[in-house]
Image (cartoon, rainbow, N blue to C red; front, side):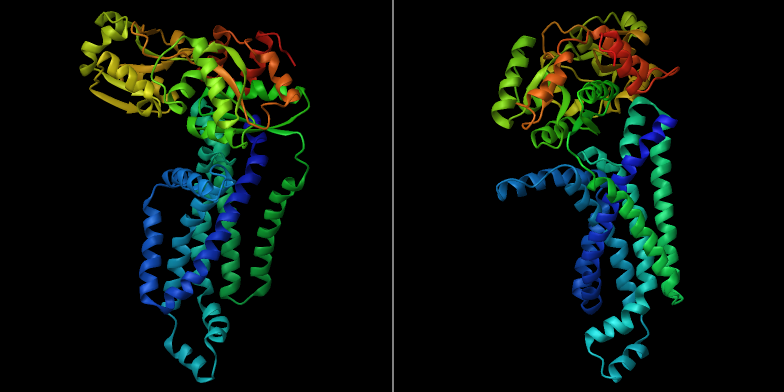
Length: 509
């Protein structure tokens, strides 16, 4: 548990900054809209309708939608607009914060006592004086209630920013779910909940101070919030020289390899930050944009997803093709292969495969309509699945996506009959699974490769720090390290597994 909590301070600072910036932007947008809506029923209908519409979009989808939008904007203005990380998270969360602030503000202004407003008109106040001296003080308590709701929503939804490459307390939650490290999940949830409750309590104190006209109370509460924001900001003004960002997708092997690379870079004198839980597209795009300095991908993933290739040449040809394409089209460098392959491999429970007489994907095809398929989140949308499906004519009774860890659970429990397992996963042997052969060669090679951002592609010092890892990791060692993290008992953290792997391949720190 102490290891999990040790990661909280850095991520908490990032989480606070993101949530505070989104709430402030939400206020900047909502306050003028509130005033305009109170003056015009048409503006009220349109603004409240749009704010309500935003709330109907799942927050994860809203975050993802900003990626193509910002890519389009960046292309329109000639580049320079980040499509990942802080900006899309800020915009999505600010839109989420709009509705409670807007609705409470409009309701408060609409229900003011008409006699009070007539009295203000009677003494000759201008519209601005009436708003500033009469309406604003009277509506402030109701508006503060909306701000409190928006603050709690924003802090909770900010955990999802992990998926677009923005560090937050969601890093702990996503990593914990993938590795079944409940200490990480608990630390992330408790920190986010504690932050939300603390901010809500301070805003509630400010609300009470405004309602009871006790200036010291609301000023004191807001001062504490400002102090907390300043503490979160302080590390951002510290020197970042020598800091590198190591990326990782959302499964155990990626967390281990990120730590393995991070340890090597720390040995070389770099300060290392991690961006974990990234999707395949996000991880490559973040590296091409320079938001991530290095991460591990798999040659077949780039070959099919990014290069849109459907042919299946030998593994070495795929790696060479990926190296040339990544440099030519994105300036992304290939620092080397790690020495093992992690390919998709269709797997079944050993006893079930034996009972049905299934040894290959060709054997599987005739009985697939009576079987259930469980996959990871991405697989059913990947070209590899379409290639295998069309090559063998695979049609399953059902196909359900799971997080990778729960995909194995589904097979173990009998909720699924077949999964696209990962060939370097230690659970294949531990769970006595049978990997089906691919006689038609429909699945490409998936060599683990280190991809580096354009600014690191010719950085000799950086590349030299990674060089000891090139072709150094045998698949047997990777499986064992993966199983240390994935097993149910005596679990190890990805950092511990990376340290073990270093010893196994002769790179002890």
